Amino acid sequence: MSTRAPRIEFAVGAFLLLALASLLVLALASTNGNFGFGGDRYEVTARFTNLGPLRPNAPVKIGGVAIGQVSDIALDPVKLDSVVTLSIDKRYADLPADTSAAILTSGLLGESYVGLAPGGDPEPLKDGDEIFLTQPSVDLMQLVGKYMFSGGADNAPGDDAAAEPAAPAEGGSDQDLPPYLQ
Image 1 (cartoon, rainbow, N blue to C red):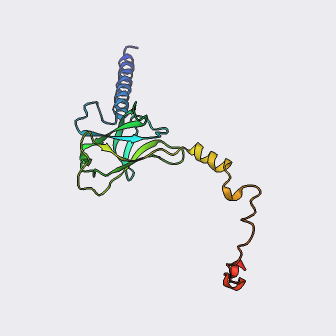
Image 2 (cartoon, rainbow, N blue to C red; image 1 turned 135 degrees about the vertical axis):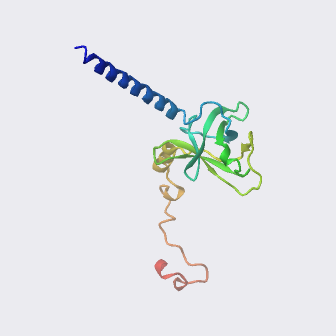
Image 3 (spheres, helix red, strand yellow; image 1 turned 60 degrees about the vertical axis):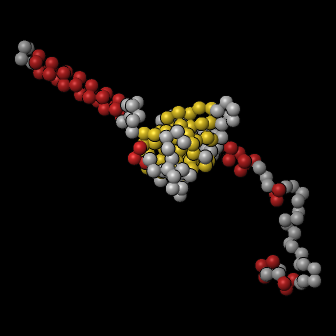
């Protein structure tokens, strides 16, 4: 029995080391390589009227490539719009000053992210600058509701003007009309 005890102890020790290593990998992956030092990033802000499901730590992307993340979301007490702080990697410090920002969704029901579209200004964005060209999040439920429950003016009951063919202009004849309207 004494010869099997070291094998069991070794197996338990190896299992514990493997579990600790797995926890360390999980901890590193959850921080996305950002340990709170922030020395290799710069921050810019953008104002939106509707954030939708955007949350802190959401990615900031250009053309589908993540270049940063949302570091903070706050409400401006004066203008009552949302101020989003974007933390962007210093490798992308040459973004033009007229860059636009939009809140987009990956797929139909995927995660929300901030999509940037660079402009053509030769001046780059600097730390603390604000992106002025913004597009808010689209509320899918509101769009579906408008589509389902709104009848346009052309479809109003009792409006028979759309059902009647257009009369020829004064002095004109049916021959002046295209064949599909005659």
